Picture 1 (cartoon, rainbow, N blue to C red):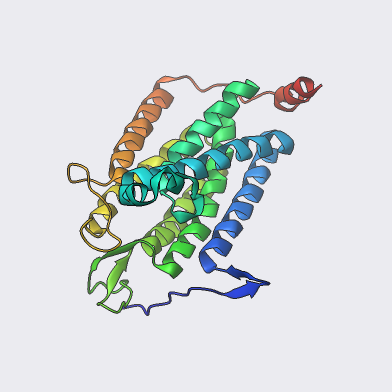
Picture 2 (spheres, rainbow, N blue to C red):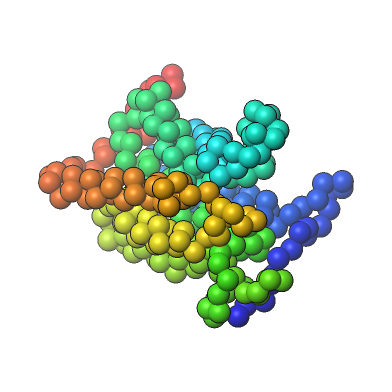
Length: 273
């Protein structure tokens, strides 16, 4: 068993308490952004435009993450506090709500800016997300905000009521040991556009789908609501897994496209004038 490492506060910045989760999430955003910009430069995308894409994606992701958490995981809070709870974006985030929100925000950016190579942009952001996810799930590990069922598994964390699965910790390990090496390996292979998305979704969604069966039942404190026996995240896994299979089939059937020309940069500069 692993010891309980839960902490509430690290230190105070004046009157503001600094919590480990918020600090790690902020670190993940900054690290993910830096990695995305690095990959964008290698792909010939101007950092200024990639920063715009990140902004659209991240803002939409956080908004959807909270709305999803409120509506599908804590409707009781909406009933108690009213619609004002929807504005309290710091009160809870759903990872799959964030995924779908990020997709929406990115597609809005693509439409508004008339991006010619959306997959190229999306995969730069995806690689940054994988790196940032390591810090985010490390934060979840420390604060133990995704408790699972009681278990004597050697990676379970000791808790006052007995050792439990720490689902944030499992995702941290999976991202660090599987997803990050995967995107680094694919980069060395110089794979075609779309391969990163297919690989990450095919690896992540089955793991997350089956891991959610370890979550607490909705009747337990901190438990997740089920809809026809499945969590909201599990339905999200099904949708994204189907999407990954569709993209994989399209990649196999579509001839290898030529690499984006140098004017990926020039096009953006001309639009800015």
